[in-house]
Amino acid sequence: MRTVTLPAPDDVDAWRGAARGLIADDIPPDRVVWQVGDASTDLFAEAAAAPRADATGAPLRVSRAFLALAGDAALHADPERFALLYAMLWRLRDAPKLAEDHADPLVRRLEGLAKAVRRDIHKMRAFLRFRAVEERGEEEGGTRYVAWFEPEHHIVRANAAFFVNRFASMRWSILTPEVSLHWDGRALSEGPGASRAEAPDGDPVEEVWKTYYASIFNPARVKVGAMLKEMPRKYWKNMPETALVPQLLASAQARESGMIATSRSDMGGNVTAAWEALREEAAGCTRCPLYKPATQTVFGEGPLDAGMMFVGEQPGDQEDLVGHPFVGPAGQVFDRALAAAGITRAETYVTNAVKHFKFEPRGRRRIHARPDAGEIDACRWWIEQEQMLLRPAVTVALGATAARSLFGRTMTISRERGRAQRLPDGGAAWITVHPSYLLRLPDEAAREAEYARFVEDLRAAHASLSSPRLKPGATAGGN
Image (cartoon, rainbow, N blue to C red; front, top):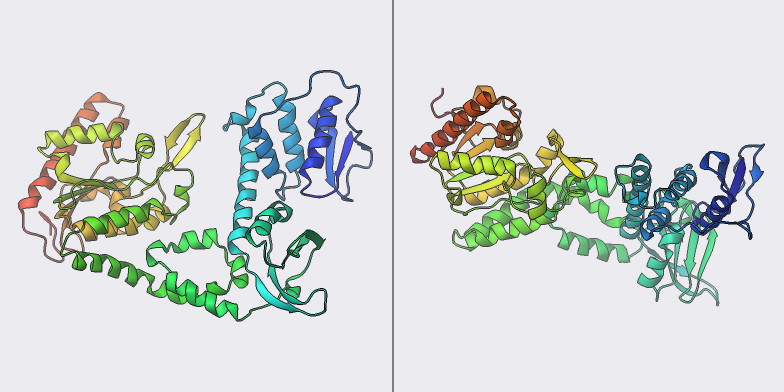
């Protein structure tokens, strides 16, 4: 066994040098023990030798993609990270393009480590708050800005250049449990780790910052679940503006609806500008995690005075790539059924209950995955605003996900299909199957029968356009 002792948990260069030596000596991963500092290890392992000067064979060349991956993954707190990276390096000798195979379990695990590190770097940049401290003495006189941060991974030194460049004219210190950074305006120095008690509390500047934060708080961008995910409560105690969050959240929903209503009133009923603003807002939606792997938000399309609104489940693979709803295989079935029912798609507004594509990677393919209740509820606000702006006389839910989005509860298609349900605004909502359901039917006879029934559902919903709007508590053709 070989033991490699790295001087620091974030010393990527030391790992690279040791890894090159091990590769040169043809030492397989299962014969290497990695440790940091004085951490205990295998008592019978021998220390790793330096790279041999007379090592034969061509040096191992790796792609920039692997170097970038290794640079990030090596900063993770996982104690196995260096062993995993060396195992990857060992396999690259025979498979130089392995780093591009995102379906490989080892590659996926390392990418997960790297992603977590990048996320932690982002959090440090976003949530770290400096507080002014007056220093005494001739050499240290003046103001120093001190911040406290608790990173999850070994990212402090890797993040130092960002703060040096961002706050070059300030004298500052960043205290963390592992290491402290100090900038005097000319040079960066390090110190031992610190405790939360050594960091200052508030200062007068914070009142100005809280006033500014409250004035720019945008209710249309409030996503409570996403906020807690992106800004966990552990960071709140270091951020003065978070004391304002509860009261700002309390009035956010009312302010959101007010913005839409005001847009209608100010424009004399012309909803185009309000819809465009809503679509632009949705393009940056982070209410649930689905925005991360998706290519883009796929918003609704169609005339804003349409009498019919169709709500599907979510964008598919093709919709995610081109940014338009119902353009893939299910969209082609939908268009054909509309024509058979005597409906022109150009006269309808088409959207989805969930605006981002949820999928599972299978090699190079992306396989559709059904949105869960939390994801549907997180995206429900966009559907409500689309309905508020368009006020369609008839809304058609295509599938169970769309029905849940419209009604806020689970709806049984077999029981509710074929009759209109009342929506809060008095409009009629019809529930039918999603066109993708027809594509999944294996039997041709069953597929044709269900397609005919689907066309009949669309025809009935379209015919209800000429019917009076439903009275509260009533259903068209029902009790």
